[in-house]
Image 1: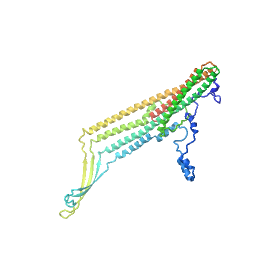
Image 2: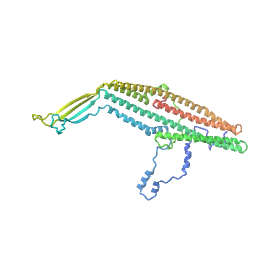
Image 3: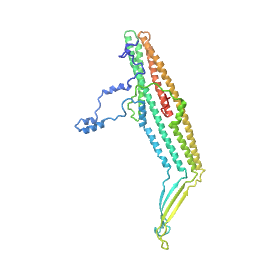
Image 4: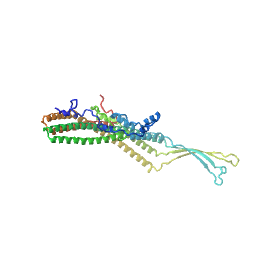
Length: 475
């Protein structure tokens, strides 16, 4: 039997199910603000005067607020899509990758040729260009030529770095999606916890009424009333704590979505509570080896280090410089003939003779950098394997807890509460046991949603560790 005060208008028991949908807790406060009239804006005051229709239409568009996002609950998929579209950190690293992608063509191109204009052998006594036979106006061109293979290696180094940056963008996308999912599921749990607190507050208020009624007719104790009031105050304290946590999580989510920090966030109340079976750990690690952007980025960094080493070895060979010049002479020879012009061809190269302190040391440096990148790659592989294993372990533990709470503990606790209420109604169970059984049920319902959210957070971490969302077995 359930006391009449604990039944709703349809005769059903109120406030004991963790699986029913409730309005968002923040909606309780909306009606408070609805009672205050809006403050008139300058546009409203101006519109009250005699204006042309075009002017009023312009005022309407200027005064209309621009929505931040579509109205309605923010689903998990929508939150991830919004973050990937507007997050400034992702946009910044994408711009960096685009900048690096423009470098390979530059690195693989010859240096710009040089042009020179010279006045040679000009006598300083009269500055005449016809006085001396060797005076000439010379125009020349020269081109630097790196040793064969150097330009190709420089371009390949730059390309490997650009590829690594591109994989870095994809890795950040995975981490951003993971962070959004983690915060979203935190918010989902807090909403469910607040719903449970709200329903239990209603139930405890009814407990207080029942205890007061029995006390007023001499069938109950005053301590029962005080006990119910204390437990109700504890729930109010828990509500304050949960609402503070929710505000913090809303700020975190809005930051990831590039929205104003205090923008309201509403999540869907109903959601599918089942879980699909996962691929085994070996299959997931094989997928990560093939598609995880972090590992691909490290592999390209190893390749860039190898190419830098090969380029350092090329510095044992000289670079060249070719040039040609044409000298224009004025004046006449002693026999009266015009002076002939001069043509010049130039060739030069550097001489790498300080190899012990320059090239040898550069090769040692690049070789050490290559080893460092190789070790970093191996470390990342180990970290990825550990992340996959930990995420699978956390998911399975939470999944087992969800099943235990849903099929065993919560139904048993609900039956206990119903039995306690029936016994209390005929004075066979004291009020303390009734309240304790209800608080126990409240704790189990909260723990159920906590385990459910943690299981989904583990799946989010697992998808990020593998590098894709396809982590479940095909049905």
